[in-house]
Length: 319
Image (cartoon, rainbow, N blue to C red; front, side, top):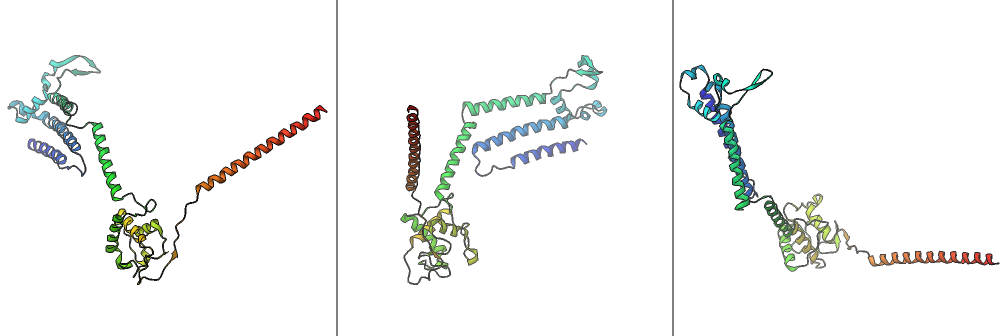
């Protein structure tokens, strides 16, 4: 039984260490987070170790059994005695207090050393934390961690903006820069020439250089067509192969080919696309102004009529 308890204690302690130190920090975690996890693991191991010693090594059979009283204490019993300072049952009368409650007597046992070790350990850890975080400044307090996380988030956001991750068919704009169009041409030559030809005049796919569009023209419609594809006609969705920025570049390049009319181009397909013009808001404002002025004139007319009626009544009164 003794060997079984020893083996159980060792297995339990080994399992705690393995479960704690086998964990690796996820990608993207800062060094401070790893340090905090290590400190927490050390505290957990300390507490677990003390409780293992308390619950296993303080078993009465190691110290108070008849066989042990006739023999010298075993190694485990000595450790138990040091950690607990327990008083044998035969000597409990020496530490019994005077009062009792319903026949229950209270013993004046000393605080177990293992509990004091745990308490002093927390004080030592707190002192180390104070020196590390607030005196030396080698550790990051919560405010520093927050500032660092904001900085990392801003860097990621700028990277996403740079790569065009936020571009979609609702906010995409047509690029006019020659360098951007050249990048779009490279994407077109690699991914689009099999169906639309090197000159975009069309082979299996339609002609992209005329004013006719099957699924709508303009940068937003062309962008959406490339993103979603046309499965019914064999065009795949490119959103998994190209980034939003690349799709914007190739869509802008396609629109830059309008009117080139290659000699081997396919006949027009679809309808002529005409960009919708934004209504003149100035005219709307002017019409609203006219309405307001006309209302004002009507109010003035009513006021004049009221004054005329009042004058007539005064004249009748005079007569």
